[in-house]
Image (cartoon, rainbow, N blue to C red):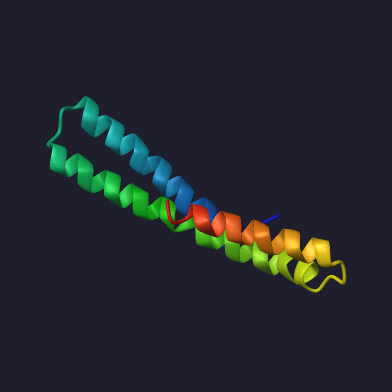
Length: 92
């Protein structure tokens, strides 16, 4: 479960990205200049890239303390491996 202010920021950025996608589609369908389309695609990628850290930060606040503070070693290890796994995906 995401918490504020992360939830609001993530939703806002995703809605903006949705609008950018619609704009890019119209540009392609309208045979616009390729560099102009590419510029918009790169802006869209940047907008999407900003959402992941918001979700991760919210997760660390909501689940991090519970899992890292747990006396159950397996629970801690599972949480840490989960964070490492998703962090490695961000490099792709």
